[in-house]
Image (cartoon, rainbow, N blue to C red; front, side):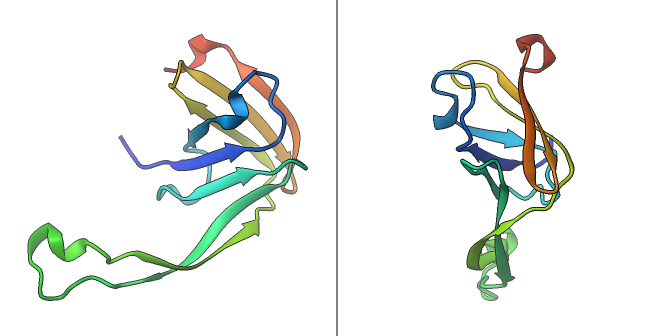
Length: 118
């Protein structure tokens, strides 16, 4: 089990209610529960940020880690990806999409059969 990123899709998906869901993906570069968005125009965006250590040096054990990767200066930046991103959710049921981008712009999106995941 590893980390994943979250992705929302504002580009019209051909399944009722699908645009209201938050999906997970392991096909993005960060894999640190970062946020991505496919905008209405099909462009791919990433919520970038700077990281600061705001942990409490007086704490011990795991408590010392709290705040060690504080996200600062959050901003949305375009992603110039050429390739596939698969994104999925299991709520309310398994739904998985395959989206292919060319230079950061959605070229194709397909709903995958339920048997492909979950």
